Length: 319
Image (cartoon, rainbow, N blue to C red; front, side, top):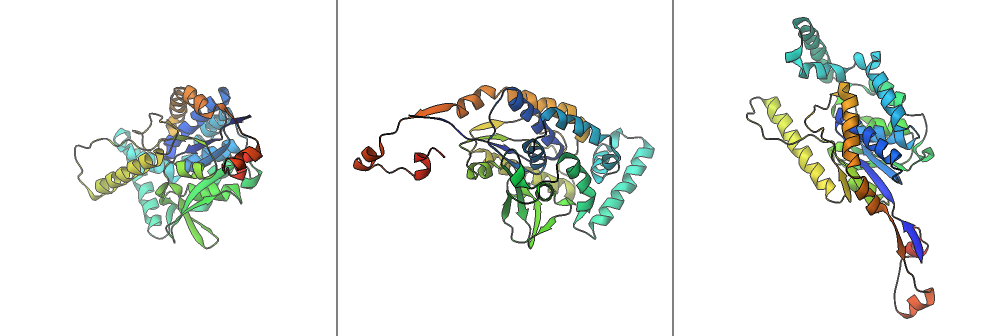
C-alpha cells in the first residue's frame, strides 16, 4: 500500500496588469497551505510565478508592486503613457496634450525598432521583483513560456538565467522588444499559450490549477476603425486560445478582471483582492483534486505471473 499526494502545478496566464490578480491567488495558496509542486507562467504570469517560486511571499510581492507603481521607473514608462491615452476622456487639456506627444514619441520609436520599449528599459521592473539567479536554483520548479518569432514555435525555458527567461516571456509584441537567445528571437508566450496548462501538465503535474486573467469577450455595438478591427480580432483570438488551453485543466480560477485594460496597473490593490476572492471559491476543489490517495500493489512476482506491466516510475512511487 502506498500513500501518495498528486503533484500540483499552477498555470498562470498572461494579461498585462490583470495578472496582478495572480498575487491574490498565491496568497490563498499560502494561507490555506495548498500544495504547489511546480509553476508554469506566461507573460505577467511568468513574472509573478517566478517571484513566488524564488521565495518572495505574496504580502511582500504586493508591497513591492505598490512601491514600483510610485517609482520614476514606472511613472516615466511607455506603459503609463499607453494607459493615459486610453483614459483620454478623463484628462485635462494639458494632460491630453502631454499624453499625445508622449504617445507620438513612442509610436515613432516603434517604427524604427522592434518595440516601443527596449529590453534595457524593461529591465528595472524585472530586476525589482526577481533575484539574479538561475532557474535551477529556485525553491519551486519553474517554467517560463515564450515563442521564437523566427521559427514560430513555443519555447519553454526551465533552466538558465531567471531574469532573461521572464523578460522573454513578458516581451509583449510591439510594446517590448523580443529577447535574442541562442539564435532565437523570443517573445511573449501568450502568442501560443495564453494560459500554459499544457506546459504544466507536460512538466509532470497530475493536477493543473489554471488561472485565467484574459480579457472578457463581450458583444460590441460598433467597430468603426482599422484599429477597432485589429483590437477586436486580437481579443477574439486570445479568448478562444485561452478557452482551448483551459480544457485540460483540473481546476480553473477566473478572477473577474477581464473587463479591465492590460495597462490598468494602478488598480493593483483591487486586482490582487479579486484574485484572492476567486481563489477562495476553489479551495475545496483544489484540496479534493490534490488529496492523498492509496494504491494497493501486488508483490512484483504476482504482477509478472498475472501478466500485469507497470512502468518503472510508478513502481518506484516517483510518478
